[in-house]
Length: 112
Image (cartoon, rainbow, N blue to C red; front, side, top):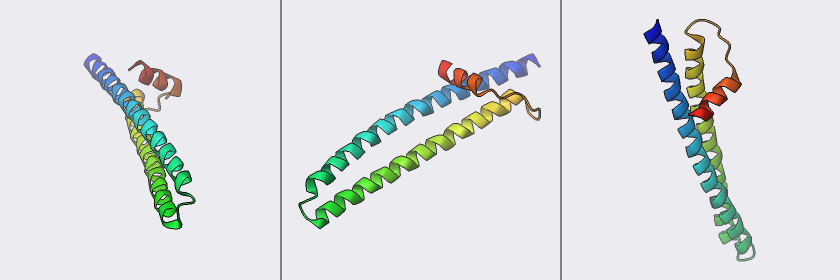
């Protein structure tokens, strides 16, 4: 039983490290998307009076980047949810209804 508990803890630590990495990558991605959206928004403003075609092209690119940004964030949410579900399964010890504590999980993720 002791080896199993140690393996369980080791796996939880690995999941926390993975969650931390997901969060770091999400922050980098979010920063890049925010910068790109700001740049494209500025470009749309610049070409507003240059003609409909240029404006439409820039607005289309802006909308595409916004959509990609939202899809990226949804993917991060799914990945984090999968990791936390696995972590919770380990915490509950299989079939039992253990007390999942979001604060404990968040503290564990922050400590990783």
